[in-house]
Length: 150
Length: 150
DNA sequence: TACACTAATAATAATCATTACTAATACTAA
DNA sequence: TTAGTATTAGTAATGATTATTATTAGTGTA
Image (cartoon, rainbow over all chains, first blue to last red; front, side, top):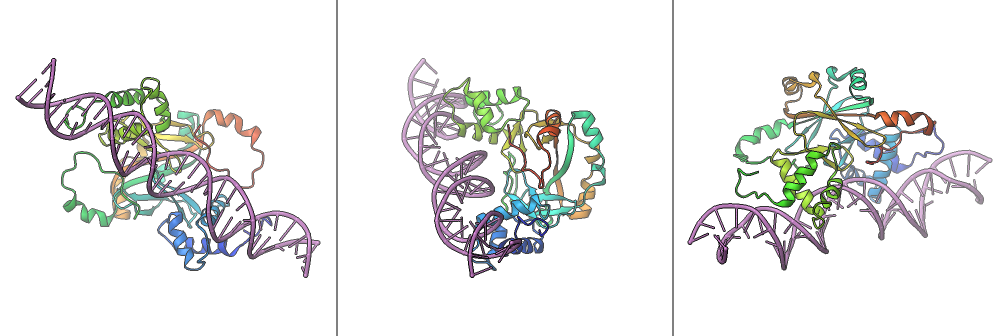
């Protein structure tokens, strides 16, 4: 953050990053906002959004796009994918599958696209939800909506 | 749609499905709404949303979740993935990569999750945008936002 | 064919996540 | 210390989606 003199290291910016890196739950902006508020009670949600956007453009945090849900953020910028529970919405880390690597040539040939990034989103049931699955969901005729975030 | 007596075949429902199946652009609800409006000028956007949700629960259409963007819909329910242009937002089809198949056992072992579905989201530049890439984007210091939908 | 039942609709309001705006504040360099 | 400007808090606006509600229209039965 210090290379560019136009981008300042403010208390808000520093603490937003610090708190995000400490969390391993891939929080949405409002969840991180609540954490940061414990240290900076007067911070506004807009500041959290603005800084997460900036930090992600600088490559210091990762935006984790969850389809059909809020954007989530990850303080771990190393290459990895995520796995999400369709029941409770929890998101966990998942190592990059080696079978996904080096398929950019194939993509190019098939579609004409230049591949920039690949994201694998695995939908499933987390260990906790698997336990509860048997009892409370007897015989649904149609699929349930994708579960809540918390 | 006829097995369940509680779910009726209305004009709106039928035409929404017909128009979606005809389109191969993975439209968002409002784009499909404009198409349907040519045949049913008094239909409301809420009706389109409501029926797309129902049809997807019945397995007759697929919701294509695009992270950080509107939900899109696909009349083709066969198993396949999508590739999206980060510049213009266009979404095209992509065959399921054989390397992604049968990794549910590995997922289970690594994370304890029961894998229900996997989605591969490839971000890249579509052929059209690749052409324009060289001229208008000289030297950005930070990454651009993900492009617009149209 | 008409009737009764209730699902579905159009129109609109409400909600939720996110972004934009603006006057006041606080880094930073001279 | 000051000037310049990036950043902030507070708030309004936006855009996508969902909820509400009175009315309309499928559907099974008489």
